[in-house]
Image (cartoon, rainbow, N blue to C red; front, top):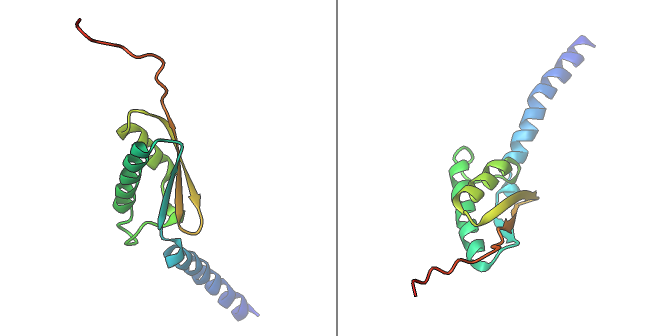
Length: 117
């Protein structure tokens, strides 16, 4: 009985990390699609370029970005810092291979006409 318990403990120690690693490395969980909502086409294009660059930089360990491992808060912070006309960005993981970015743009409350005439 003790041998059985030891074998079960060893199998659990090896099996659980193996299962997690297998899931993280599965090709189904590679980020294949980035969807962007709540902005005009120009901002969508800019945000997608920033997101793809960010994910490529983050993917160095596994060779490509994994949906489970996308650092959502860091990606949102990078978007808002590089695109000053964005008020906020929210990053959501959609399994198996989609990252959804919801953008709220700043709204201009006034325009200043600087004609010298």
